[in-house]
Amino acid sequence: MKTIDTMKKEHHAPTMKDVANEAGVALGTVSKVVNGLPVGEAYRVRVEDAIKKLGYRVNVYAQDLKASKTYTVALLIPNTQIPFFASLAYQVNLALLKRSYRMLLCSTDFDSGLEQRYIELARGQKLDGIIGLTYNPDLIVDDDIPFVSIDRQFGANIPCVASDNFAGGQLAAEKLADFGCKNVAFLRIGSSLSNEPNKRKSGFENGCLARGLNYEMKILNDGDSLDEFELFFKEHMKDGRLVFDGLFCVTDSIAYSVMQILRRLGQRVPEDVQIIGYDGTRMFGDMDYICSTIVQPLPDIAEMCVDLLLQESRTGTPPLVCLPTTYAYGGTTREAGETTRNNV
Image (cartoon, rainbow, N blue to C red; front, side):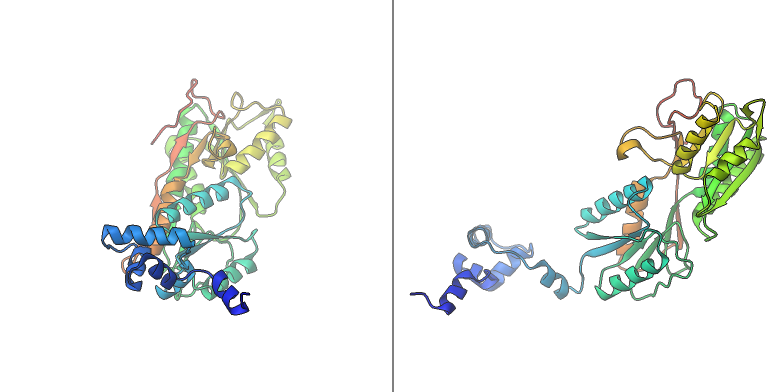
């Protein structure tokens, strides 16, 4: 009859020592194989066969602790419901997987307090760094954990990665002018937080001035009703037609909502009003653009964030990296049937 001790021995998880005994090799040889270090081919085969036979599993957590790394990076974003944030999370995860890192997704739902708690969590779990797209104006980011910000500058010691928002806004004005617009408007919803996307407004103004476009601004604060845009349009109607023939919306999400408002007002897009958004949002993530848009280079943004976060030394790290935008046709501008992206 088997004793309890015997049963425990028969059912314990196999160890590296068990693998060494099974393969008939030294424990150090097993360690080298497990950690990808070079050994003789015959030894490697024997160890791998023993691992397979015993069902040995490498304790990755223990390895990470030994190396003083967790190979895990936190990504802070407001939510995964807005397509731009979801696409960003997808691209950051791909960039980390290429480097054998894991991503811990932290969705804050625009909760400022939760942003701060996630940073504390990352520090407590000894994660290897944080990539954050944050909105807490009082966010505290200490120097004891690497941090890369998206769209918001915290200071010289924390790198910020963004698309070139000024150039993107200017490009939107230039495109509307190229497509025959004369009277245009800039539409925005945003917080008072100082961040890189605010530069879309000044870039658009600069483009309008350079191309001789008449323009007006309608800027709402976070939480304001979209009905404000409808009232704005109604105030700028003449003989049943909107006086604006072109609109630049600061995000594609706003552009989509504006299209619905214009339809209710009997305005045709793009026949009566042409619209350009910003972000490069696609239907179902990888199909057609939901509107003509200024495209943020999300794969490049993700790669740059991960490179900056994982570099060995932060000496000489630029405080701001701006990556170029492009224009893409999405059906809300008049372009003689053009249906492909124009790189500018």
